[in-house]
Length: 178
Image (spheres, rainbow, N blue to C red):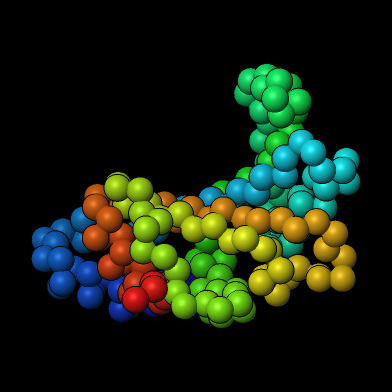
């Protein structure tokens, strides 16, 4: 069992039940999935998409899905069906292992890190954070990195409000800015 899942079951869930006053264990919020997405764009070289795919595969351990443009946009020289990005959905044990590596390994490597912003909540309990550079992940080989890729991370929870989600994530060791 991953360390973060053990922490959730043994420490976080009982603390949330006591603090929020839940009567049923099914009311306790939990993390349902983590979605990582990476925009590649249309202006980059042809070898940018395979490189981004390799990076996202190394970070998550899963093969990403190529996302394609839905409409034509003449100003961006974009046609419907052109590949514009990649995404991976993590669930279950892989999700908890990634969250552990993200919180304890990747975030401390961010330059001038003072905590993740509190503004990333969307109103229904999900949290979004953008990473400007993928080089903070230890799985990425910096010598082979040609293009500066960013990464968007969405943590989807079963919480009904942002306050519940923030409490859940802070108990799961996500360092929020003061």
